[in-house]
Length: 519
Image 1 (tube, rainbow, N blue to C red):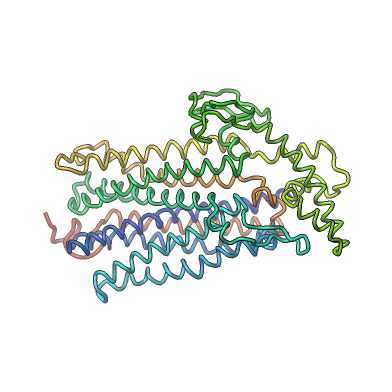
Image 2 (image 1 turned 90 degrees about the vertical axis):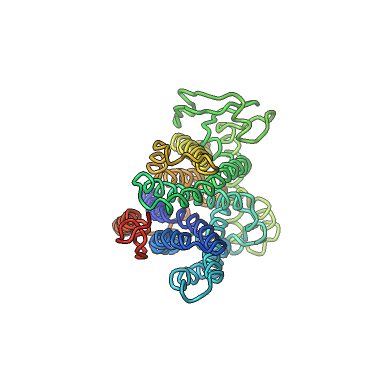
């Protein structure tokens, strides 16, 4: 069973990681198009129209393949995670349904208008279409991240012992969950950074090649300033996300920070360590004093609870969960017992912890202390991969801020010098892939850090999977890998082709690779 769950997790991880190659660029590029087209509408300068069309071409390639890779993900909830869908479908399905009916149709409709209505409507009307595409794309992200945020912090829901399912009690709480909202803003701003690095890097390539300089200069400046604000927002919202994790998912936090023992304030922050998950200790640890308290809970007086203490606390929850599950089993045999129903509901917060025992035994009457200890230990995910994934994301996040700060500082004003700084242009060019690395690292932290839960504290991952065979999973996994890799190759080929051509691909006759060049 454990092997089947791992295969299902691997399949979903691969499809999600492939899909998330395209999502950040879509989220950010569309707002850059809005900025460029707004300048065109205000100034009437055709070069801004060309900029909107060219970068829109790259956006369109990315959008089309992104939609293709995203369609299969929602189906996997039914095919690979059937019990999860049954258990929480009434809650998880709501934001996904709204995303499809509201956001996806909005962006899909107006993206067609963006590409094909240039000569059919006025400038302002076309700009409105572009804005609506941007709103639709970001609304899609909102609803998907609300659903994911609920999995991280399942607020606004209750367990019904008669139907054996989770039910929605407050849509408002789910929508405005601090975890979900922080995740939304952090993720979308990461997309803005991704698109800004993309445009900045390609523009730097044109400047290095002395190719289409008026076009490249304007693109460089817009992406530098937009990226600067986006990178600041990413850092701020990342800090807020971490603060909410400290309260909502303490086991994830201690894994990210490699904190095994409870530490009294002020707590240092580990910049380098060698976590030993088996021995529950760090073999080597380099810390910056005080910074841990400032980052983790914005407080220099409160202690940080360590993994060992959390495991001990969770062992008590596992035992209470075992008792709650036994009461639930009794209630299924005596559904008219109102006192028993009341007791089950009163202890429903521990049911998920009791389910962790099902990994070791189906007989809850004969649970041993060793089983409880193993189930409690499972509540802390692997420290080593989380520790370094977070620090990769952290370091890259600050590198983006520094890149945009220098790019914006040297490109605005009378004494702009960015074109002479070859090192800056090469940095921007070679840094193009790094936002995707940061995004993947961030999602790894979010999803792997939630283990062993599909829904934190409510439903263990191994209980969520469908009853599939290894052969079925390997076949579908192989198929997804081959098809998605082919799509990625197509994406990269098209992106390289049109990025190298630059605005000459518009066929206006004005640019570098065309006969009539503007000097």
